[in-house]
Every structure is written in structure tokens, then in C-alpha cells.
Image (cartoon, rainbow, N blue to C red; front, side, top):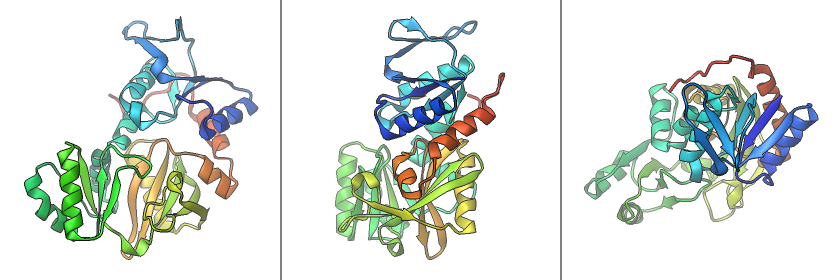
Length: 300
């Protein structure tokens, strides 16, 4: 089958591994920069054009769309969906997951445990907003932030007020979240494909930091999940309508808490730590589900 990998940089580890895994199974693979695509939105014959030519039909599309191009990237993916390509994560599900506030509201509605989280716009709400999440220490997050960027730990009330007011001064949307102290800078990244957790690692923040992101110097090791952690990870992915995702879980005194659902999880940390062929599993999933005449699950 013909598979399109939608990515701005084919040299990234995840793109290279997905390409290798697809080629090893006899598929034809093209890496396509979404920003170089343009579209004919014709109800009778929708098309995708790329660098001066109309693209042939691809049986499947793997979106590796960075957060900076979510709007246009998901528009391109929608066009691939319109011409019959099976998406490994639908465009609508990706936009749900990328909107931190929306995704947390959807998860909470389904009864999925989360850190207590507040969201507000007016600076007059700062004191009550801090109290809402249990006071300092607390975490302040930019809604648009990724990979630990725009995430600040405020250890005192005064520091929390200063950070919140500073972010609001930038007209930025922010979330205020309780700090799970017992996690001690650790979280668990669960890699979910379909209805199964296929791999998991525990990430530890570097000394002096509380953000466990590997891009920010965190380390990773193998971890054994509890039954409750597996259930909550799969439920979170299904709630957002995703096929594949990385679910970040904090181990708290009251049980596992979902911190974030990543619709485009990096493969390097998980594959290197666990030794598992995650890219191959993703291609296997496409082979099982990219059938002629498939229907989108999410609509819209």
C-alpha cells in the first residue's frame, strides 16, 4: 500500500523509524511536508497538490504534525481523509488532544482522574484560582506549550501570583494545576495503540527540575504498569478518539492521574528504553484497519 507520512522533517527519529518499518513490510512510503501542500476543496473531486503536482491517492496517512502547525497540518490531514486515506489519528481527534483545556474537560467528563486544574482569564481571579487548586506549590502551564515549554512550578503563593499575572500580561491562556509532590519529578509515559498499552517507561526529571520530558534532560527506565494505570491510559485515548497516543500519568496518593495525552508521541525514548518495535506495531495497526471504504469515527 502507499503510505504518506505528514512531517516537516523526515530526518527525525520517529519519521525514519516509521519509514523503515513500512518499507520492510513492502509498502511504498513518501514523507510529505504539510506546509508545502495545497488543496482543491471540491465536493465532487477533492485533491491534494504538493510542490506543483497533484498527489496520487494514498491508502494511509501517518500524521507527525508539530504543535506549531496544528491548524494547517490538520486541515491537510482532513483533505487526505476526504480522498479516502486512512489516518493513523484522525484530524478531529488530534485537534481535541492539542487543546489542553478541551481535552481535560473531555477526560473529566468521562470520570478520568486528573490533577485538580483551574482555568481563568481575568487577573481579578488570581487569588481564588490559586485557592481552587489547593494553594502553593502549584504548576502554571501555557495552554499552547509543548515538551515542557511554558510549564512553571511556583513554590509559594507570591511566586504563583507573579507567574500567573506575567502570563496574563502576555494575553496567554493558562492552566493552573495542583502540584503532585509525591511524584518527585517522575511520570509514566504509556504508549497506547488501539485498545492496548504496548509499552511504558518511567521518566525522571533531571536534578533541579520537575519536568520529566526527555527533551529537557530527563532520563527513562522500564516500568511495570498496574492494572488501573493500563485501564486509565486506554480510556483516555479512546475518550479523545485517537488510534495511537502517549499518555502521561502521575502516580499520586489517590491513584493514577492523567497529566496529558500526546497525539504525536516521539518514539525514540520508548523504543530505546524498552527495545520494542513501536514503529512496526503502528504499521501493523494500519495494515489491519486501512481497508477500502473505511469510515471516519469522529465525523466533522
